[in-house]
Length: 103
View 1 (spheres, helix red, strand yellow):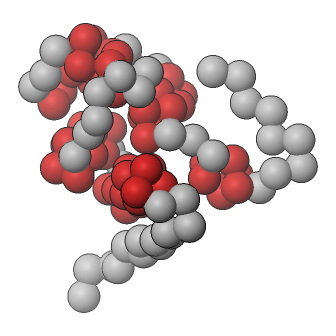
View 2 (cartoon, rainbow, N blue to C red; view 1 turned 60 degrees about the vertical axis):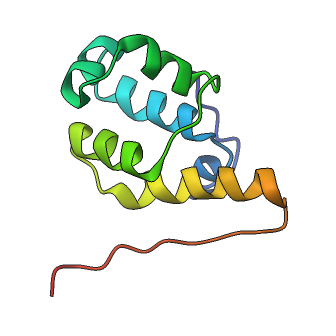
């Protein structure tokens, strides 16, 4: 995936990504193969490929497993996934998820 921000902020860029594109971006930046990610979360590499290419839908539970396997907070994964799902219902709906520090 080639990234050209052309004046966009990173947040603006991330908001344009689908859930699958976000997973691919993070996975590739961490130099992890689809096969390795699939092994870490206990699924088939074909499923990771289908998610990344938008041929399969995902769940919050799966987003959490991916975030955990990659060592990231679930917040951006969940936000992108939920935004994508909301847009399919109504393009005007939007959410923002913030992660709270441990109390």
